[in-house]
Every structure is written in structure tokens, then in C-alpha cells.
Image (cartoon, rainbow, N blue to C red):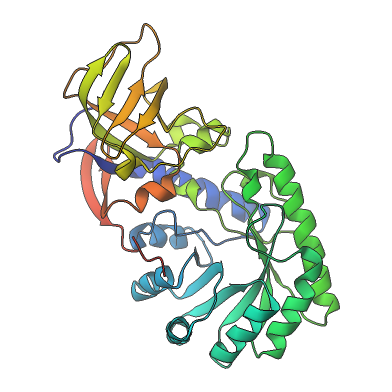
Length: 357
């Protein structure tokens, strides 16, 4: 149980001291390994946090959408990579051209067709592209040995090629983390080679994720794009990537019902998100009671099971829950409550919430 903060539950609260420690640790690690850190801002969507990341040495920001890029450009950020194979509709292309006029803009591409389409829309804008590589996640991205074909198409279309990138998302598994990092290294090595064989340069070799970051082969990868590390979440703990003491963001929820070894709290899927990978042991965990788990979710209810013999919190008590996937949870709220030493010190707007287009 925790002391009450002066607002009604449920809400998401950031322990700023833990968050700053997470940020410093990642920045120091990137610096010591000689790689650039370009954190993924889709996790936090908060300009105040992004400013802290750049102050610690990040070279720029990664985002997932044009809308997120616009929000951070409006907040004064000037170096942005949209790590997504953007298909340029006429209206989206106009937005990207406008972005390229005020920031250093890079965009993902993963096919000849999208390279040609981007070239028709963005040639001469100053925007650059990175070729996305599938390193084993089996989502978007071209096969590594086809990267040169896509890069050459982009170059012919008038788009400078800055390099290649990948997301080793299949590292989100307790047994596949190190293999995913190896797959990433192999794929990016091949892709950079075939791009250079096509007569182009691939100076940026971008990869990494929060689970695979420590295992990333920095002899190959020279730019890291983790996102979740800023807050961490239950998934990262269960993957062995961090400890409970590294959880910087939790949902605060009130106990509204009790029976047996279970309590019901007022933080359901509309505050925690509903993500639960097959290997996860619950829909969320309690940092203050490590063996307690969220075992069921409704929109406004979460069922928390406590281990046998554990004392249950009283009705009206407030507990902290670490969501499984913090990126999804943050996108469900308008603001984050900033806490230091158990006291609320600020509120940060989730400025890029819902900026999905």
C-alpha cells in the first residue's frame, strides 16, 4: 500500500528519480560503447522527458508516426527519425515536406514502390531515408539481401539514403533475447554490405530495443533506439532486463472490492492496456508485492490475486500496478503525475497521445 496522492484514481504516476536514473544509465552505456542513442519517444510522448534525454546526449528522437513527429517538432526538437515505412498519401506527404523544412527528417522505407512514391512526393525536401530490414521479427522490413535494391530505388527517386535500420522485436521472449540480437547483427551487416555494393553509403546502422540493448553488437550497430527503458514495465522485469526498483511508472488504483485472496481495483484495461504476451504471468504486476498478479481485466476493473498467506489491502487502499506494456498504457491518459519522494511535484501532458496518423 502507498500513501494517497491528492487526486482520484486511477492515474499513471512517474517516479522522477527512478526515471532519471534509467535515463542516465542508458546514456552512459551508449557513450561507453561508442554508439549514438536515439530514443523512441512513442513510449513516453512527453516533451519534458525528451528534453532530459537530449540533455544527457541523445542525438535526436525516434517516433512512429508523422503526427508524433509534428508534436515534437512543435515542441522545438530538430532531429527526428520516423522509424516506420511511411506510405506518402498526398496529405501525409505535404505534412512531411513541411516537417523537413524545420527539422532534420529521416523516414523509413522498405520497398521499391514506397521509395518511388516517397521520391515523387519528397524529392528536394531535404528528407532522407533509411531502409528498413527484417531481422527476424517478421513484421515490416525488406530481406537483408534486398536492401541494396530498395536503397538504389530511393537514390534514383531523389532521396538521400542515410543507412539501414531494423527492430529486433522477436527479442521480446525470455528465451530469444540473445538470438534476436545476433539476428539483428547478421541482418544489418548483410544489408549495409549490399547497399554499399550498390554504390551507396550506409553510415547509419540503427537498431536495438529495450530488451536486446545490452546484447546489441555495437561493432555493427552504431545507433540504438530503445523506448521502454525510460519507465520499464512488467514485461521487462519478466524478461530479466530490469529489477522492480527500475520501474519508474505505475498505475495507482483504489481497492473497491475483496474476496478470498483477490481484490478488485478501479484500474482496468482503459488505464493499464490489455497487452499480455503468451509468456507473461499476468496482465500486470505489483512492484510492492512481487508475487501478486493482475489475473483478469475488464474496462474499469482489474482482478489482483495475492499469494496465499499475504495480507490483502483494505477497501479504499491505493496500490501500484506496473502495466505489462507501458507504451500502450501511456497512450490511454492525458497526463502523467510526476512524483518525487512520495510527493506530487508536477503534471506532464502526454502531448503526442493519439497522434497516430
